[in-house]
Amino acid sequence: MTMTYIDIPTNISQILQSIPLDGEIVRADPSDHCTLFYFEQEVNLDFALKIIPIIQKITAKTKPFIINLNKYSAFSSGKYEFPIVVKPKSPELMKLRAEIKDAFEENDIEFSNNFPKFVPPITLAYIKQELPDGKFDEVAFQINKINFCLNTDNKEKDILKVEFPFGNVVKYSNAYLDKFSGYFEKLAANDEK
Image (cartoon, one colour):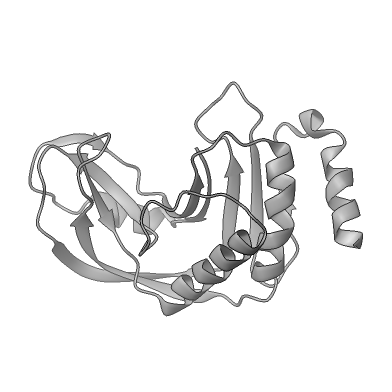
Protein backbone atom coordinates (compact mmCIF):
# COMPACT_ATOMS: atom_id res chain seq x y z
CA MET A 1 0.00 0.00 0.00
CA THR A 2 1.18 3.51 -0.76
CA MET A 3 0.62 5.92 2.11
CA THR A 4 1.55 9.04 4.01
CA TYR A 5 2.23 8.47 7.68
CA ILE A 6 3.94 9.54 10.88
CA ASP A 7 6.68 7.44 12.44
CA ILE A 8 5.96 6.42 16.02
CA PRO A 9 9.07 6.60 18.25
CA THR A 10 10.37 3.18 19.31
CA ASN A 11 9.77 3.77 23.02
CA ILE A 12 6.13 4.78 22.37
CA SER A 13 5.63 1.82 20.03
CA GLN A 14 6.88 -0.54 22.78
CA ILE A 15 4.43 0.98 25.26
CA LEU A 16 1.56 0.54 22.79
CA GLN A 17 2.54 -3.08 22.10
CA SER A 18 2.47 -3.82 25.84
CA ILE A 19 -1.17 -2.74 26.30
CA PRO A 20 -3.11 -5.83 27.44
CA LEU A 21 -5.98 -6.60 25.05
CA ASP A 22 -8.77 -9.08 25.77
CA GLY A 23 -9.63 -11.56 23.06
CA GLU A 24 -7.81 -13.80 20.64
CA ILE A 25 -5.24 -11.87 18.65
CA VAL A 26 -5.25 -12.87 14.98
CA ARG A 27 -2.29 -10.69 14.07
CA ALA A 28 -0.22 -8.28 16.13
CA ASP A 29 0.93 -5.02 14.58
CA PRO A 30 4.27 -3.33 15.27
CA SER A 31 2.44 -0.05 16.10
CA ASP A 32 5.27 1.84 14.42
CA HIS A 33 3.30 4.37 12.36
CA CYS A 34 0.17 6.49 12.29
CA THR A 35 -1.56 6.46 8.90
CA LEU A 36 -2.55 9.87 7.53
CA PHE A 37 -3.61 8.81 4.00
CA TYR A 38 -3.49 5.61 2.03
CA PHE A 39 -3.91 5.10 -1.66
CA GLU A 40 -5.79 1.98 -2.78
CA GLN A 41 -5.26 2.46 -6.49
CA GLU A 42 -2.11 1.33 -8.29
CA VAL A 43 0.36 4.22 -8.14
CA ASN A 44 3.69 4.94 -9.81
CA LEU A 45 6.51 7.47 -9.69
CA ASP A 46 4.56 9.99 -11.76
CA PHE A 47 1.89 9.90 -9.05
CA ALA A 48 4.57 10.52 -6.42
CA LEU A 49 5.91 13.45 -8.42
CA LYS A 50 2.46 14.98 -8.40
CA ILE A 51 1.89 14.75 -4.64
CA ILE A 52 5.41 15.43 -3.31
CA PRO A 53 5.30 19.20 -4.05
CA ILE A 54 1.76 19.41 -2.61
CA ILE A 55 2.79 17.86 0.71
CA GLN A 56 6.07 19.77 0.81
CA LYS A 57 4.33 23.12 0.42
CA ILE A 58 2.17 22.35 3.49
CA THR A 59 4.86 20.81 5.70
CA ALA A 60 7.28 23.68 4.93
CA LYS A 61 5.01 25.98 6.95
CA THR A 62 4.13 23.44 9.66
CA LYS A 63 5.71 23.63 13.12
CA PRO A 64 6.42 20.59 15.32
CA PHE A 65 3.60 19.61 17.65
CA ILE A 66 2.71 17.11 20.36
CA ILE A 67 0.46 14.06 19.98
CA ASN A 68 -1.17 12.51 23.06
CA LEU A 69 -2.37 8.90 23.24
CA ASN A 70 -4.53 7.31 25.96
CA LYS A 71 -7.44 5.39 24.37
CA TYR A 72 -7.95 2.46 22.03
CA SER A 73 -11.01 1.23 20.17
CA ALA A 74 -12.07 -1.27 17.51
CA PHE A 75 -12.87 -0.54 13.89
CA SER A 76 -15.67 -2.55 12.35
CA SER A 77 -14.70 -6.04 11.23
CA GLY A 78 -12.53 -6.12 8.14
CA LYS A 79 -9.95 -8.19 6.27
CA TYR A 80 -8.18 -9.23 9.48
CA GLU A 81 -11.22 -9.34 11.78
CA PHE A 82 -11.40 -6.36 14.18
CA PRO A 83 -8.53 -3.84 14.04
CA ILE A 84 -7.74 -2.38 17.46
CA VAL A 85 -6.41 1.15 17.04
CA VAL A 86 -5.23 4.12 19.03
CA LYS A 87 -6.54 7.45 17.77
CA PRO A 88 -4.21 10.33 18.61
CA LYS A 89 -5.48 13.43 20.38
CA SER A 90 -4.06 16.42 18.58
CA PRO A 91 -5.88 19.36 17.01
CA GLU A 92 -2.67 20.15 15.09
CA LEU A 93 -2.62 16.67 13.55
CA MET A 94 -6.24 16.98 12.43
CA LYS A 95 -5.53 20.46 11.00
CA LEU A 96 -2.48 19.16 9.10
CA ARG A 97 -4.47 16.23 7.69
CA ALA A 98 -7.33 18.55 6.68
CA GLU A 99 -4.91 20.87 4.85
CA ILE A 100 -3.36 17.97 2.94
CA LYS A 101 -6.80 16.49 2.20
CA ASP A 102 -8.05 19.81 0.80
CA ALA A 103 -4.90 20.18 -1.32
CA PHE A 104 -5.26 16.61 -2.65
CA GLU A 105 -8.90 17.26 -3.57
CA GLU A 106 -8.04 20.58 -5.26
CA ASN A 107 -5.41 18.78 -7.35
CA ASP A 108 -7.56 15.70 -8.15
CA ILE A 109 -5.36 13.35 -6.12
CA GLU A 110 -7.30 10.17 -5.38
CA PHE A 111 -6.90 8.69 -1.90
CA SER A 112 -8.91 6.21 0.13
CA ASN A 113 -11.85 8.08 1.61
CA ASN A 114 -13.81 5.15 3.02
CA PHE A 115 -14.21 6.86 6.38
CA PRO A 116 -15.51 10.44 6.04
CA LYS A 117 -14.64 11.26 9.68
CA PHE A 118 -11.21 9.65 9.46
CA VAL A 119 -8.96 10.03 12.48
CA PRO A 120 -5.41 8.87 11.75
CA PRO A 121 -5.00 5.49 13.49
CA ILE A 122 -2.11 3.60 15.05
CA THR A 123 -2.94 -0.10 14.73
CA LEU A 124 -2.23 -2.26 17.79
CA ALA A 125 -3.55 -5.64 16.64
CA TYR A 126 -6.35 -7.51 14.91
CA ILE A 127 -8.60 -9.67 17.09
CA LYS A 128 -11.37 -12.19 16.40
CA GLN A 129 -14.18 -10.44 18.26
CA GLU A 130 -15.12 -6.81 18.87
CA LEU A 131 -13.51 -5.26 21.90
CA PRO A 132 -14.94 -2.43 24.02
CA ASP A 133 -13.02 0.84 24.05
CA GLY A 134 -10.24 1.04 26.61
CA LYS A 135 -7.86 3.49 28.24
CA PHE A 136 -4.20 3.36 29.23
CA ASP A 137 -1.79 5.75 30.93
CA GLU A 138 -1.35 8.73 28.64
CA VAL A 139 1.83 9.00 26.59
CA ALA A 140 2.90 11.87 24.35
CA PHE A 141 5.53 12.53 21.73
CA GLN A 142 6.53 15.30 19.36
CA ILE A 143 5.96 15.15 15.60
CA ASN A 144 8.40 17.03 13.39
CA LYS A 145 7.90 15.34 10.02
CA ILE A 146 5.62 13.12 7.96
CA ASN A 147 6.56 10.48 5.40
CA PHE A 148 5.36 9.25 2.03
CA CYS A 149 6.13 5.71 0.93
CA LEU A 150 5.38 4.40 -2.56
CA ASN A 151 4.26 0.74 -2.85
CA THR A 152 5.16 -0.20 0.70
CA ASP A 153 3.88 -3.77 0.55
CA ASN A 154 4.91 -4.83 -2.95
CA LYS A 155 8.61 -5.69 -3.00
CA GLU A 156 8.49 -6.33 -6.76
CA LYS A 157 7.99 -2.64 -7.51
CA ASP A 158 10.16 0.41 -7.02
CA ILE A 159 10.01 1.72 -3.48
CA LEU A 160 10.43 5.39 -2.71
CA LYS A 161 10.37 6.92 0.76
CA VAL A 162 10.22 10.68 1.12
CA GLU A 163 10.49 12.54 4.42
CA PHE A 164 8.83 15.93 4.84
CA PRO A 165 10.49 17.63 7.83
CA PHE A 166 8.36 20.47 9.16
CA GLY A 167 9.71 23.84 8.07
CA ASN A 168 12.37 22.27 5.86
CA VAL A 169 13.11 20.82 2.46
CA VAL A 170 12.14 17.32 1.38
CA LYS A 171 14.53 14.41 2.02
CA TYR A 172 14.57 11.34 -0.23
CA SER A 173 15.79 7.93 0.83
CA ASN A 174 18.83 6.73 -1.05
CA ALA A 175 17.32 3.29 -1.69
CA TYR A 176 16.81 2.46 -5.35
CA LEU A 177 17.94 5.89 -6.55
CA ASP A 178 19.42 4.35 -9.69
CA LYS A 179 15.91 3.26 -10.70
CA PHE A 180 14.62 6.83 -10.53
CA SER A 181 16.88 8.34 -13.15
CA GLY A 182 15.10 11.30 -14.69
CA TYR A 183 12.39 11.58 -12.04
CA PHE A 184 14.31 13.93 -9.79
CA GLU A 185 14.94 16.21 -12.72
CA LYS A 186 11.17 16.40 -13.18
CA LEU A 187 10.78 17.36 -9.52
CA ALA A 188 13.42 20.08 -9.87
CA ALA A 189 11.60 21.41 -12.93
CA ASN A 190 8.32 21.49 -10.96
CA ASP A 191 10.00 23.42 -8.12
CA GLU A 192 11.15 26.10 -10.55
CA LYS A 193 7.59 26.79 -11.75
